[in-house]
Amino acid sequence: DIAKVIQSEFSGDIKDAYLVLITCIRDRPSFFAERIHKAVARLGTNDSTLIRVIVTRSEVN
Image 1: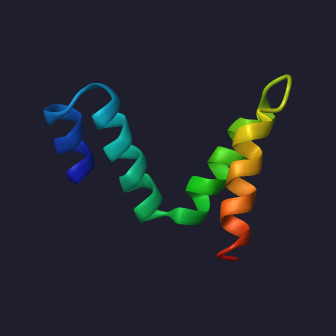
Image 2: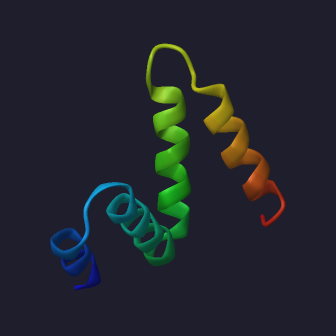
């Protein structure tokens, strides 16, 4: 599995970026649903993240 290789071979921001990319490629709807959930789940919505996700997806969907 490519994710396991990335976990073992990379570290820091590059590892995080690769893992996010793989997650998005494997299941795009779940990826964006998770981003929206994280933006609104806490006390105080993360407006910038929520707006960014909604606007970027509105062009596609």
